[in-house]
Amino acid sequence: MQDVRPKDDLKGSEGDPEKGDNGDTGLKGGITLVTACIFIIGEIAGGGCLTLPRALHDAEIKRLYKWKKTGDLYVSIVFCVVTGWAGLFSLILLCFNAGVAGVHIAKCWMILEERWTMYRGRYRHPYPAIGGRAVAPWMRTLVSIFVNLCQLGAATVFLLLSAQIIQGVLGVLTVCQWILILAAILCPLMPVAIVAMSTTLVAVTTIIVMIVKDGATRPAATFDIPTFSSFFLAFGAINFAFGGTSAFPTYQNDMKNRSKFIFSVIIAFTCILLLYAPLAGVGYAVYGQAVMPNVIDNMPKGVVQLAVQILISLHLFFGFLLVVNTPSQEIEEHLNVPHRFGIKRIMTRVGILLVVVFVAMTIPRFDKVLSLVGATVSTSLSFIFPPLFYLLLCRQKGEWPER
Image (tube, rainbow, N blue to C red; front, side):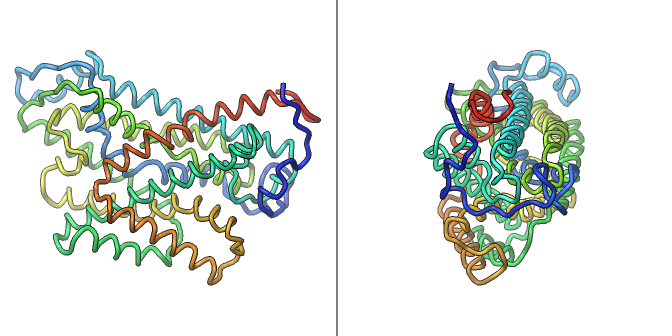
């Protein structure tokens, strides 16, 4: 067993956190359980859900025969589910796993607060701190790199997809030009989690209704056999759709009562699954092998499609600010940027935004970026590290209660 004393053995590497006003359970004036839940949904649900029908297509484990009764949508859905979709099963399984991992990363932070007083106040980069305490200082560095790659990768996807949707709706300028315009608008704004969540809820509900109506009048879908590579691309896309765990410790750190963050995670992932599963299943059942990487492109042209595109763009617009906040805080800590608003903070955040813009303009295929990020760093942060760190923290011996 590892013997770890409750002293600051990583002193000098953790920054200078602010002290809390109400002990080790949270911060006075911090966010509530409901607000944390909204932050989780606002960050996770959105751009990733648009690729889920295509992910089911890529992950299907067997050929399904073309329906003899053209337009029989409801029989198609039931038959597909009964015969077994690997993609839909993966979707539900990864949602459950991501929720369990979110609960464990929340427990990890509670352990850190219990053992080291320096974590009982406001702290800028909690996930790397968990890795450092659970393993060693080098793990803190590795987790920090992974968090920044994951969050900045997600920000790139959000910016790309938002620019593509707006360019498709308006039909003017290029995607790259819209990226620059959106980046300029994003600079002075603050995160609006409620807007990000509500726009996604309305958009996904509208998409499902329109796909069902479209499926009642279009020819029956056919389904292809996936390749080895397409299956793992699908895994990456589905994984990315649930890959917001890297920001969870930051949300928990800002709560009034941090022990309640576990309930925020459970509620949020339940809501997300209720959004994702119907959208993925209905979209794939209706369009089959014809499903596009962005399911909005399969919808009938018209006012409703335009409204959905606007809603998704709004989500991505405000969701971008949520996902870019975590790496921004850590980079500011490394550069010794003051916590207060000032020229150094402005320049740092503008620089981060320019990096995201550069990546977005040089890799204008959001689905490929999504699969790459989801299959690499997001897998580690969302599924591997949380239970691993929890087990390692529980194994440690010191002047604290055993777990």
